[in-house]
Length: 196
Image 1 (cartoon, rainbow, N blue to C red):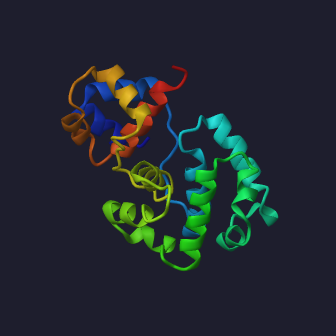
Image 2 (spheres, rainbow, N blue to C red):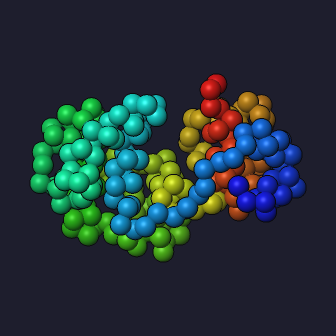
């Protein structure tokens, strides 16, 4: 985490700053290439409501479906949902991935344009896809678009970590203080929960 981000948290929120010091280094927030967005979204769908171990295992089997493990929408549109289901994902997730592939193939959803959209407009575009709600879209903003100022109020892990640090105090004014680095605050909170 860059020094200016640390200094920001030190200035606006000593509690979060102490948590940042305790958790140590964080993974960097970087924007992926637009050619990786489709594969990344498939991964976000697969990981919904799963522990990291289960998600990783299903994702590995999912990648094995593709020639040279290159996840492409045209391949997904050509296979049946039951082939996706064999990887261990639910029928709902298989249908979501099929819907994503279809909407990308027909250009109803233009993934390559997402990086030029505001957070709100990117979320609106992504939630056109069956099975992608606000939480999944927010994770995509952080981990694929590299947005540094996203906080997912619907994320259970963030709520749990917040409550542990701040008790039952209203989240809104505290989270607002963290801007323009709310994604970094999210990483701190998630990491503070590791092993708990």
